[in-house]
Figure 1 (cartoon, rainbow, N blue to C red):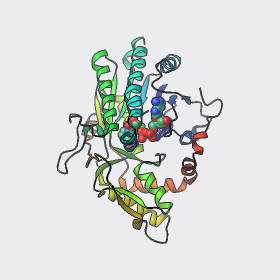
Figure 2 (figure 1 turned 135 degrees about the vertical axis):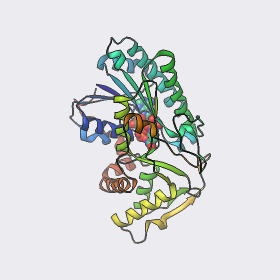
Figure 3 (figure 1 turned 30 degrees about the vertical axis):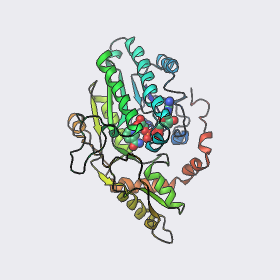
Figure 4 (figure 1 turned 90 degrees about the horizontal axis):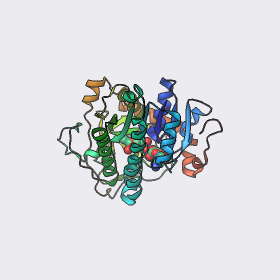
Length: 351
Ligand code: NAD
């Protein structure tokens, strides 16, 4: 049994589906169902006894303690967070509460649980903290990619809150010996991403015939990783990562934002032809405040020590992703209408 937080979000739901495709080990999924949580992402698991959904806040230490005592997981995989940079600029306080306060409460509950575990469960327990490459700040065009030894220099309230959570995880290992693992991953793309993020936002906006807003000159560089490759990396880190270590996860696939948007337009031109090329809908808008110019991640440690490499090339992964969103219009429509918030977990599948 493992406990996953934030398993109704984008990466967390992909992780749960991927996990249960590879193993019969059950999952307790603790998610508060904020606007970003969507139980429709897990519709394929309705009636599957291996997945137990619990609606709740990671900051509720007594709830987490009760779940740990009841289900006795061998590991905790922590995805739950406020994750959208633009929202963190407009209203940062929830990012501080969830990403810092929530992670701290979770660490405290995990530490109390772990402390009382008998051996060998105590030695085998893991707390895997899922974090971002944004904690390292921005790179110049000619600078080498971030390694696990790069200095932290977060620039947005989101990145700062994730950086703080990484430090609390680090401190829990160094001070108390809690067997933690931290992963810092680049931008993910794939199914079930909330349509406020670049790729699903651009697909939905293009199909609606509206202007495609690209921040500034669109020359901001990001490394893109298919979400399934991230899930595989997390399974690998959980299985073989060394306690106290940090692992960077990336696709070695740097692209400018404008090139990502043009690629989406070109794929849509073929898959969902409109009267004119979707590229004509691209418009440049005022840049995001403090927008980082470039992120790039060196995943060499994960490759060398744990043998992980990404399987999906961007060209095939992005084509699959576009086709997924085209085939899942009902999923997107439920988000647009707000109906996804009424998705319930049927009796027997929830705790
Ligand atoms: P998301 O916004 O899609 O999902 C977050 C989930 O957490 C939602 O289901 C939400 O309901 C839940 N949640 C929020 N606050 C909660 C709380 N207080 N208690 C319980 N649940 C709560 O996020 P995502 O894109 O899936 O990202 C997951 C994790 O991966 C985050 O920690 C993020 O920082 C990290 N990450 C994301 C990316 C990316 O490209 N999306 C890249 C690297 C790292």
